[in-house]
Image 1 (spheres, helix red, strand yellow):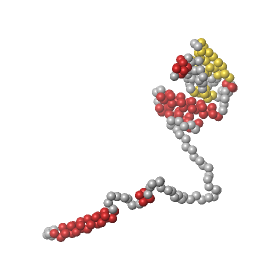
Image 2 (spheres, one colour):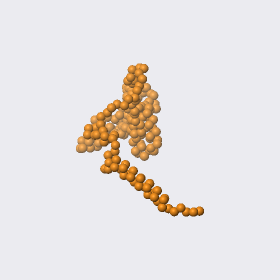
Image 3 (cartoon, one colour):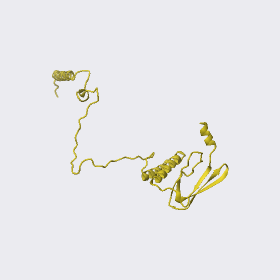
Image 4 (cartoon, helix red, strand yellow):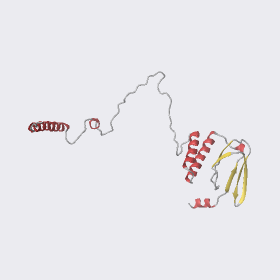
Length: 197
């Protein structure tokens, strides 16, 4: 921890600003301070192909400036993804800082979908469309036999329900109660006297 505190107490370069030729969308917008052994990565989306990128800051309290030709920058396919990740991270940080969720969400979704990135609001689904059957084959649906897990019984899973009282005894008791109910009902109707009108 002491080494970390020493590094944080003595930044190499502070108040860093990067000026790009022409219009550029830069992420992160504020690069922060530069510490010894730690890089600062700034990614920009610009239509300018030449000119000078001016980097300014303060070193040991004195002004510091460097100029880098834009032609020396890299334009590989991965740079676009790096820029998109930086923008998503900046929009997420702005949302934590109090920016309305709807504005940040729309920006994150738009960038993530355009660059095929996973974010807080987007995910990717891989769909394999490679054909596995020979051309002209007619597909058929078939149930494949499977084994039950070890220790399971087929009758316990797919057989008749296991209860405390046998099902046959329940059936007999139910039948006897129905017969008794019919007998009681018929004898009760016989005992009632017929009423005249």
